[in-house]
Image (cartoon, rainbow, N blue to C red; front, top):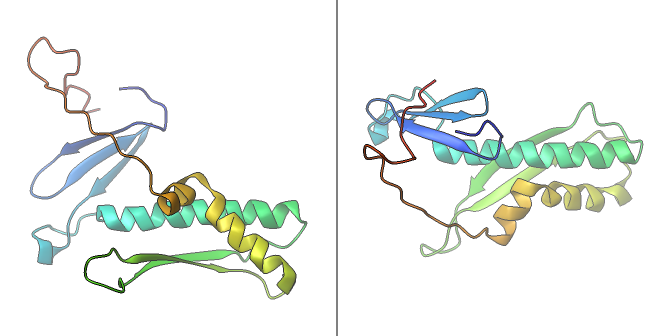
Length: 148
């Protein structure tokens, strides 16, 4: 498996737990006990919120820093707001908290920055998803022997 951060390797452990590796980092995901898991790690939905929040925080920090504004107190919270109708998805809500010293006229710039990062902008636009299915039979180039 390549070690760049653009490729993740996910393998089932036991029960509903998954071992997820990206680069040198390993994350264990699981389901809540009510969903048949053991709650030994974040759910994939929770990781999505973390990814969006981390992206928004980094973009907001850069915006503040480039303008010479304080960013040490920057906090981002991400949650889900229930959908307006049963046929639509929940709304991802990103809240950016900045210092009271930030001028009001810069708030729209910070909002734009929070939406500009790679993860958040992909979510906002709706990324294309391509699914490729590979066999791991003997002799296949794609073997599942990378459990490092």
